[in-house]
Amino acid sequence: MQTELTQPGPLLDTQGRLAQVGWSRQPLLDCNLENARFYALRFLQRFRIKRWDYYAIFTPRRFFSATIADLGYAGNVFVYTLDFANGNLYEEGLVVPLGRGISLPRNSTAGVTTFTGPKATLRFEVAEGERRVFVDWPGYHQGRGVKAEIALACPPDHESMTIVIPIGAKRFYYNRKINCLPARGYIHYGDLREDVYPHESLGSLDWGRGVWEYRSFWNWASASGFLPDGRTLGLNLGCGFGDLSRATENCVILDGRIHKLEQVRFDYQSGAYMQPWHFTDSEGRLDLTFTPFKERIARTDLGVITSEVHQLFGRYNGFARLDDGQSVEVRELLGFAEEHRACW
Image 1 (tube, rainbow, N blue to C red):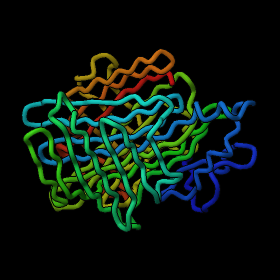
Image 2: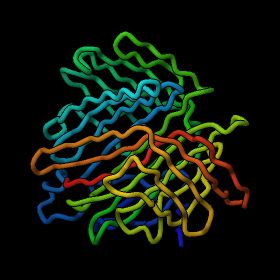
Image 3: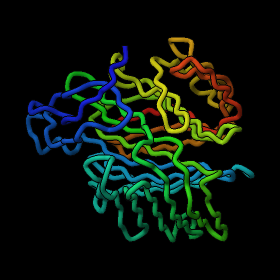
Image 4: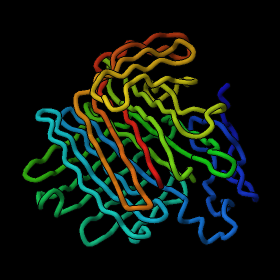
């Protein structure tokens, strides 16, 4: 059974335990990480708390993503872009000791996320009815440089997938995913400038806060696109981490409304990532085949922190059944799916 949360309150009680466990259509809980209690020496806790904001934008011509993360031991700031026409993928990242220059807000509903350093400036801002992404990285990719200013429309009634789950006895994950946000602005990379228009481009946010096991694994799949009639259709699917008995992040998002799924199976061959992936759910409401056309591999090795991500870009085909029983045909929906292993 999936537990839907409807009442606001704190994330953690005074003993550092989750006050509620479940999922919600909007973020209801105050992310009071100062109440975390998993080390006897409390000053050590900041090194185990993970916080990140990951924005992704699909335009007809490219995928563009920017992230600001504080992983406790270090910060991680990275930008990558994929050109669909020629398959060129460019990525650059910065590892920031102890997260210097990084600021992330307490909750996902307000505030400004920033990184300011000698090489780059990134700023993510929550404003009335929209979320703004700014990137200025002059030396990006051998001096070609990248600059972007994008506003993502996010009206108050736009639903998102928010989960609160335990990980083991003392750890937890608080996560919000927002799909299908109409995007406007521009992306300037090297000599190329692409104007971004909301009738053809959609963005998404992965906002995460929590304390994970040192060795972690997860799968994630996401898509944001348009149906032939102009409605937006999104997917968010995930598994592999924490106790998902009371809440998964699995859902279909149609025109800004969440249609909740229970357990979803990721059927793929690890190591042969470019082969088709198959997604089915426990209630017979989802049957999708994901056909990759590009693999992104991101590896980090900082000794105590290691990470390996295989992110596949491709297209989803199949069907999804909504809460009211209506079936939606999914045809050539552009998105991604990934496998992630980390020691962090």
